[in-house]
Amino acid sequence: MLQPSHLPDPPQQEEAFIGEPRPEDPPLSERGGRGAPAPTGASAVSSARDRGKVIALGAMGALVAVGIGLMAASPRRAGAPAPSLALTTSGDLAANTNADPAVAKQANLAVVDPSSPIVRPPPQWRVTALKDDPNVEVSEGKFGKRGIVATLTEAGLPRPEIKRLAQAFEGVRRIDRPRESDSFVLAKGKNNGRLLAFEYATSPLDVWQGRVDDSSAERRIVVKKLDLFVEHRRVAHGLVVSADLAKAIAAAGMRPEIVDAVDDALEGHVDPGSIRSGVRMRVAATEDWVEGTFARVKVEAIEFVPTTGSPLRVYFYERDPREVDASPRRAPAPGFYDARGKQPYRGQFRSPVSLARVTSRFNPKRLHPVLKVVRPHQGVDFAGAPGTPVYASASGTVTTAGNGGPCGNMVEISHGGGINTIYCHLKGFAQGLRSGQKVEARQLIGYVGQTGRVTGPHLHFGVKKNGAFIDPLALKMDGVRVLPPADRDAFQRRRADLDAVIDGVALPSAADVPDENEDKDLHGE
Ligand SMILES: [Zn+2]
Image (cartoon, rainbow, N blue to C red; front, side, top):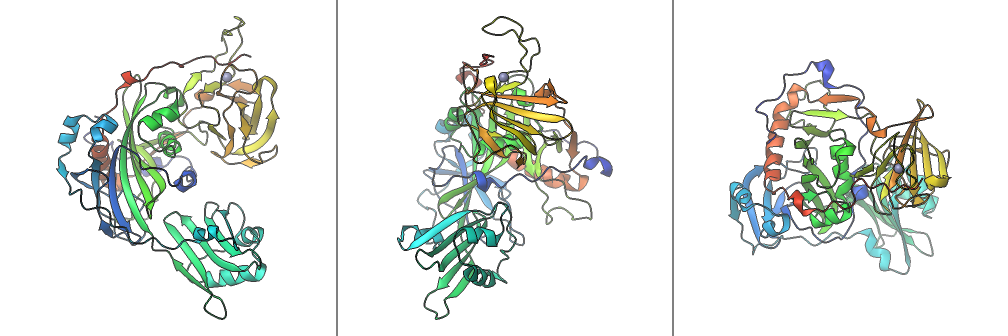
């Protein structure tokens, strides 16, 4: 299935990259939850200390190990050897994922001793532990666009303490220019404002901690990078898209955090209009667990099986300089490539709701469901439960955030070039969203609702070009990136590994899903 015996002919170097690489997606950690229960479904566990050394490989219930070599599925650290991952699948795989026993047999299953549990070292002390202390004030968050001084001043840390902290971090980790997605935890005395402890994190796995040594007269700040116990769990799930996406995700044993990542992965490869009830997917992903707590999930590969037409597989690929001869040639943009090493992309425009089904299309000749007169449908309706996040389709400037009459709570964004996008019937707006504000692509702007003249919750999404409405789904792909020849062998190895993971989960049956809400006109206007 979708495994051509060879890649296409090497593209000319000039063709390898057309247009600008799209901006890096925000780290998954931004969408990650904490403390949620472990998912059902096939999962791979490898337990590794921060240095990438495998410490233990153990049981999650009754375990079976699949005897296929797998590349490390997690982002690797520079200079650190790749942790060797062993794929393990839970014993009741069939019950959880409708796995075909024949598929399991093909995967060469071997039983692992279930009596050898994961040996986790004692967890590291974390600043959040001070939250229970009534004499301590703990504040935390992302830096966003603020610098370190503004952030810590806002958190109430006196200037001299900020200076002491910055000096203490010198030589260990630069903290003076945080990235927007970097986060911090600060603990200070409630009464005296004195610094007690501080953490700076570039990811849930990469945390630097400064802690005041109260036993020293000068209150020395001891700074170190935390040696966190990280487990990489490879998981695979079969999903059938149904009218209620959240329910379908839960039924597949998938974490809700994975939805946006799956949407990101399919971007460009799949026409947003083809996501409908009965669409099936097999998703291979890696979860990172830090000290026994879920931290983030990263999608590795997806098989997309539309209701009509051919299935498609996409694979995440990022050049590893140790694997690919690092010639002076530019590395390909990290992202999802199809089996032929191609990545179509759609400029900067994105579907405003992740993995949302289109329930009503752009239709200039639409017959109104109630009035029975021709009333054009000037946009596309996306299904979504009330409260589902709505994202800016592209970067731009908010021109309206307020009451839009029949459109309900409405956001309009101007993107330049005469293009505006409109988002209707919102339940509410992103906190602080206002007219004149600049927004990035995929920035949260509001939530699906049913305000205005509607008969049910959905997002009405419109695109205007020079003042006239156009079909949002007709926005054409802007180009195709092709992996350069130097990366092809590495990509093929990765693809073979991920194909084995996907093949290890049975494709769920599409017949299981009732299609109760497809293409229902929810408009009253
Ligand atoms: Zn509509």
